[in-house]
Amino acid sequence: MKRGFGLEIPGTLEEVCAPSRCALLIYDMQAAIVPQIAAGAEITKGCAALLTAARAAGVRVFFTRHVFLPSKLAGVGQVRRSMIWQHKDEPEETKPFLLPGSPGSQIVPELAPREDEGVMDKITMSAFEGTYLDLAMRDAQLTSFVVAGIALEVGIEPTVRHALDKNYIPVMIPELCGSKTDMAHERSLGTLRETGEVLMAGLDEVLAAWGRTPAEL
Image 1 (cartoon, rainbow, N blue to C red):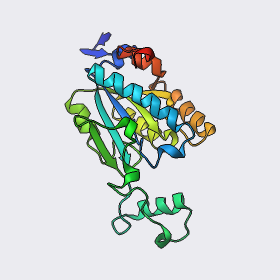
Image 2: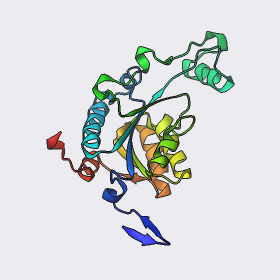
Image 3: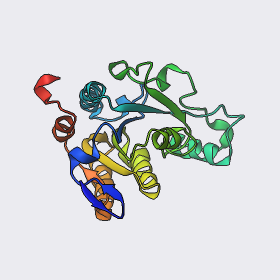
Image 4: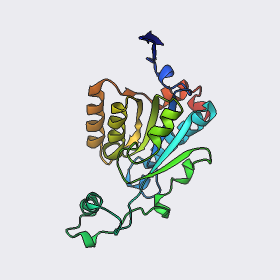
């Protein structure tokens, strides 16, 4: 651990991922979203391994779920997004996708959250906007988080960038950040690598940092 100006600055992956300062964020691994990604099953399996290791190590776990408000509650930005995503020319032609509490909005059963884990519904791309994530992490004195889920170019990248502005240390597992296309995946990873502030690690490396090996899971 580096020290200076009265601060401790984590440098290695093991230091950054220490359970006393790190959370696990499972991003939008929902029943209606996972099947849209070709690698959805593999990402689910990897996230399950992460969860097992995090729980054993005492790492705090948060899940996000993307939802849409009922049409009469939605604002301009939300309706416009629905028009774009649903390829509709008229606002009245759209229907809310993933209403809160709907079957498709739920976390896939392989990753079922426990009662002592946080599940946050959001209508934004960044997991820090309009949720309790920032407050919960700061109150627990957490300074970093490992993120995995779907989709990298839609919501994980905005979450990571937002986290950097809040001075958190994001740890990304590229193989567990799903994308619609390989091109979108590489483009997002490429721009995030350019900052030099985002840690990129393999699943095995994070498992090892939490005291586990793939053979144990």
